[in-house]
Amino acid sequence: MGSRVQSHQLSNGLIVSGRPEQLKERQPSMPLRAVPYTGGNVKKSGELGKMFDIPVLDHSPSSAPPSNPNSNPNSKQQPQLLQPSRFSSSSQPNSGSMRSGSNSGPIRKSSGTMPLQPTGLITSGPLSSGPSRSEQLGQAGQSGAVSGKAGYGPAVTSLGEGVGFRFRLSKAVVWMVMVVVAMGLLVGAFLMVAIKKVVVLGAVGALVAPMGLGLVWNCIWGRKGLFGFVKRYPDAELRGAVDGQYIKVTGVVTCGSIPLESSYQREPRCVYVSTELYEYKGWGGKSANSKQRCFSWGCKHSEKFVADFYISDFQSGLRALVKAGYGSKVAPMIKPATVLDVTKENRDSFPSLLRWLAERNLSNDDCIMRLKEGCIKEGSTVSVMGVVRRHDNVLMIVPPSEPISTGCQWSRCLLPTYVEGLILTCDDTQNDDVVPV
Image 1 (cartoon, helix red, strand yellow):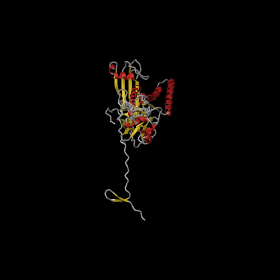
Image 2: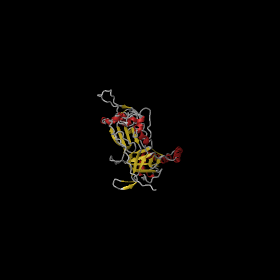
Image 3: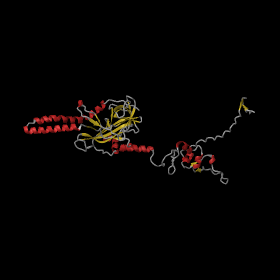
Image 4: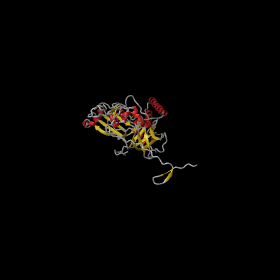
């Protein structure tokens, strides 16, 4: 005996098989309560204050205290001060502790209550634990104006007075020349005493004199020969550079994480800054440094800083990080410009210079002074010579581990010149209208 198939009729008259669908009762939805405006008061922040053990004011009618029939009906109702409850805050499904437990892990508890700022921001220390971020930046700017590198920190490299370069020949050549010169002088002196003729000694002197002139020539023109070598060195593309290759890259520079600012003129967003104070010494007077001679200029104070920056290659368009900070060896070939020429007559016309000298505890003597500043602004065209390094798809230019030689320049009668570190050059003809980045 077959079972009867149940069927039912829809509202439109169509008969279908099966039992009619039972309509489920809809759960009453709780209306969303608008978040009250706290006005910066932590005690009105609701569940956020309960999470951090802060007494809050409950404005909901359900939390109002029961009315006492014996109380005065004309008295004003005061808001009830609720202490936070671990159970109440964790039992609600939409509480902050449940969301933090599912999304961001458990909340780390420290000793004592975690304070909230008047704006509602969560901090990790007491409200008066130290100066604010703006105060720290202001203090860093003031300390940078006085102490230079101390204001920037270890990420900025402090450089010396100038580019360090030297001549180097093989020891065998040096010893051979010294032996030949010594033997020539001894033979010439012996023949002069024996034969009593100065001709032999003059011939030996004629051989030694060109060597001495060559050394003097290299001492005078060695720096210019180094600049010429850097200028003639061919540019390379970053795209085809291999790891460990020594190259020269020319392009537009942009600041890294720490932009620099010039000391006196306050030029912002620079990758290299230098400020030098020179004093002129006449026949008498005090020398600016131990190497200053009479009737010459001597450097009394020098500030040179360089930090990590980026350079975009003109040829390939790639960008590389130049590691010039954190104590790297850098040889900047930037010619500074004269900012001020101070004499006894116009000294009072530069109050900014007097303030600059006072900040650095420099004496304000009645002497002729000259202030020079040089910088590489963001957007300037710069040439960098260094070694290519590739690390995790990051292209970098780092200082070479050994000094770089220019080689013998026979056409200019120059010996090999060695320079250490990254070489930075900038076109002196660039005006202030650099490329905006």
